[in-house]
Length: 355
Image 1 (tube, rainbow, N blue to C red):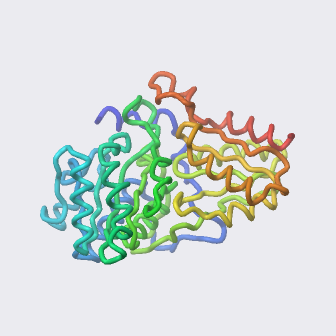
Image 2 (spheres, rainbow, N blue to C red):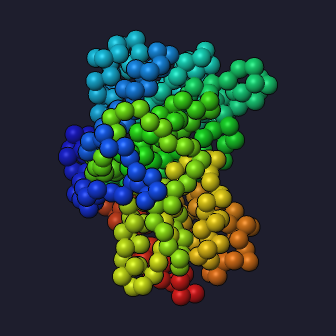
């Protein structure tokens, strides 16, 4: 894993520039400093533990900082009773977290890689999501937040590269949130921890060290279920989330060189997602492209496409385009062919605009 962390930057060094986390309408406070995404996560966890004595952080290897160092220093500051390791058992981690949250605590559980969240699927889907409903709101586990790194990393292969967000988007009772940058990660994670509903918070591990921007040192929260228009445009709407936003932004810049004006939207919260913002944009541009790393079939892009087709049918000037991962297990040496790259997106933008 140490080798993995040393080589993570080989594929995407462009992200070392200041990635545009904020729209023109939203500016970060001026008391910030430049940090990367895993440091922003670490700050959020520090604040959560410091401001609420009912908060606990736990998972595999979190006491010494975790595989990606997101929990570094937490055990030293807050003690091993509040920041602790668990057995290598995802079902047990989430089951324990549900019980802890049901007793009125803030349970912040880490699943080391999203690829290994599946053993906990029953606990998340059949227990956490339904806890409030099965008891008629007499009991709930709304204090539960499940953190997990997802997505491509350049060399992760089948079992360290998956994007399983769509599995959980089919489950009423959960919220699913994915940040695109350090500023977003800190504010959204604090909102998830304090939200009265169980949340699955996917962290783009590709960006843990590569995405760097100014982040306020203080406590702040960003709204859930509110998409952000991070680039205004008139010819086509592009929608994405997480690490894919940086790829979409590059495609927008290339398209602009050919006279195509792209509007770029970061969904941020997938469930419940902000249909109104996307709809308003598509009504303006008449065209939509959705992109994500997960495989095409059954990906959340299909839900967005269907919803916009229902809401904007008479305003659409071209079929909705989806540029996603391939319908294969995530490859190792062929990752570059699997990924929804800038060039694939640019080709789809031009084809859709010229339809």
